[in-house]
Image (cartoon, rainbow, N blue to C red):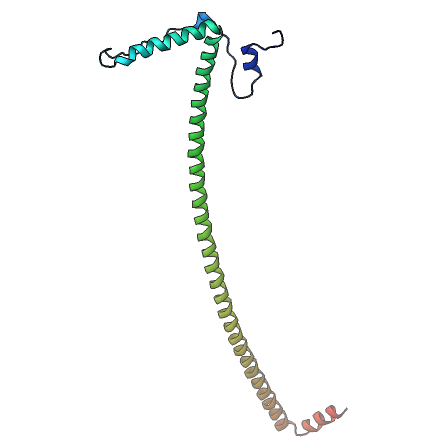
Length: 179
């Protein structure tokens, strides 16, 4: 019998989120009285209460730590209720996070669509600008040809004027080109 552990030692060695509480009669308070129905309304209730009372008395006589176990069971029940509340809050937060993720995905989709439309618009504008630049280049080239033609005409006019003034000028130009 010396090798056997007491119930409190067994409780201390078990795993789980349980707290070991010692029984201190100074801190016990009587339970509030439950509203009772007339015994004739529920005839089995009084016999059940007596039966439960007998079972409790037997338990108390066989295990002196039953009070501690009851307190522990109540604390475990309270802890389980708190855990359930935390789980409910976590579920609400998870729902809110899922909702936020859905909204973020929606905004991301809208941003992607906007970027696609902007890229198409930029491509269209680039094509338009390239076409206009080509037309502008052709216009500038034509303007330069016209200017060159005007310069040639002006040069011919100048040479004609010089020839009118000095008939030997053309001979001088030919000699210059030959050398």
